Length: 202
Image (cartoon, rainbow, N blue to C red; front, side, top):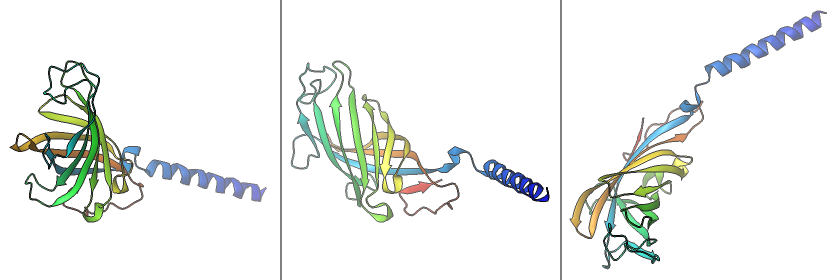
């Protein structure tokens, strides 16, 4: 009888410990660490030797009257390999690349469907990527979804705001990408200090 009583007490203590641990655990949202990244994309358009965005597939048409030729046929698909710098200045330090594609996806409106990946190539985040996608519709400020990442940004979720911040010429413009995202972390993991001036960990 005494052994049974002791066993019952131990079971009650164990149940209480499990319940207390569950109550003390933070909400699921606390298991993600906010991250902010702001970079600048040097876009070279046109057909010159510095061009970083090229026609990949000529679409079947018709020609979209809201877009400028020659890349204004419905279905036109372009590929990009743009330099990323730490400031809008085209002589500032290179810190990565943006790789991706965009396609004319409307027959009448200025709508492009885009899919691109920011690869950081310097500092402690060297080799980490942030994957983004959405539409460009000629708005002054564009917003895309952050749909994933690798390395330090594995499992990233959030959004990115893009806008043109400088135009050196009709064929060379600078796009600012302001990424607001979060990445999964263990709730028991201690918060780390920012490892780069490019990354703001809130």
